[in-house]
Image (cartoon, rainbow, N blue to C red; front, side):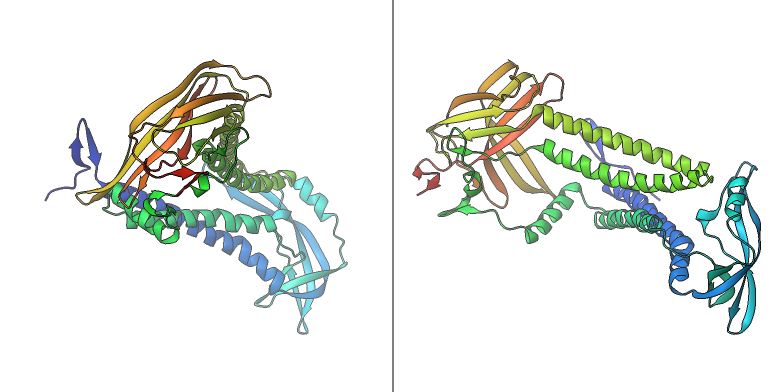
Amino acid sequence: MRLPTFFNKKRGNRRTGLPVWGSLGEGIYHAVLFVAGLIIGVLMLAGIAVPEWRINNEFIGVDGRLIGKGLARHTLRDVFGGAKYSWRPALLVQYDVDGDEVQSWNTVHSSETHETRDVAVHQLDNWELGAYVRCWYDPGDIETVVLKRGYSWWLWLLTLLLPGALVTFGATGLLHSLKAWGRSEERQAAQFGRLLETFASPLPESVGFPTIPACDNLVNSPGMMLRFRLPTESPELWSLIGAGLFSGLWNVVVVLLAVNVGFNVVGGRADLWLLGLLAPFVVVGVASIGLFCRQLFFVTAVGPTHVEISGHPLCPGNNYQVLLSQAGSASFRKLELFLELEEQATFRQGTDVRTERQIVWQFLIRRWKDVEPLPGTPFEAEEQLQLPSKAMHSFHSTHNAVSWRLVLRGVPKRWPAFERVFPVVVFPADVPVSNGESK
């Protein structure tokens, strides 16, 4: 019997792992999260949500009389053999159920349990023997009675949020692992791309030129100095949005847990296990805030980049004025403005569908060194760009694409390097262009 191997084949000096093992590991991981979410959700519903809902909706209210009171002690043994005590007021209530007189000790909510005996005694002193009180009993078990109703909304939110997140994340990952079983990354990417094509609108094309992308969205923003302002493709902005969303959602869970711990501490019921559970959540929350702030400071320090151009779309052999404006307060070791030609090819290799991108031509328009922007004033530079007379026009089809773009690459003195991309469209040389449109 031949055992399955962990490696598929050797490529150069490295070996590629089998996709089956990767899918199996991901599937087990997400299945554990899914099952854990279900178990936690069921336990929280059965222990918190359902009893509280029944008290507020199914219990029957009657007038009763307080005929006895005392303290009830609860002992909790930990894994090390130690004992932990908690105290709660115990009240004996007499009430009438369909003509029958019933006496029962009330069921106390967990928020009324205290680790300090003096606090429980002080709370017990607020009740007077012989006083008439409003109580609610369980119609299914008339000896179960409560003297207090209401909802703990933060517990309900925690009950829905934490297990719901685990179940959603686990189920999504499990379905993805099952769908990716035995499939390569390239095949998965191709299938995902076909799925997106059913929802996304097709790429707009120029009138009369079905394989040349339209530049309507590239000429709808006028410039301050030159004719058009080009749109920006900035990965730093998406990183900032992603870090902000993760930090916000994670710290909502941290706040909910911290509120629960705070109520327990104020009530004298500090739970060391809950504090220990809260600690790693707080560490990750603080780290996520730090990551978000660092990304925010980076985007703010570097500032936005604007590129204006005197004409668009571009034609081979023509000259254009390009204005670069770099805002922000950061100093730069180097700024480089390039004109690049990128080719993209989507092809099948065996059973895999691959997409490759390659910069096939690059021209350095200008390089600036040791840039020190003045406070409150962006760095601006106007350069002349001449497109090669034999330049290939922009092209886009199902399996191939030829794209032109202006690229600014910068190296700040105190921040990591960054890149800003400004796509442009190049028309064939024999097509007259006027007022930013082809004729």
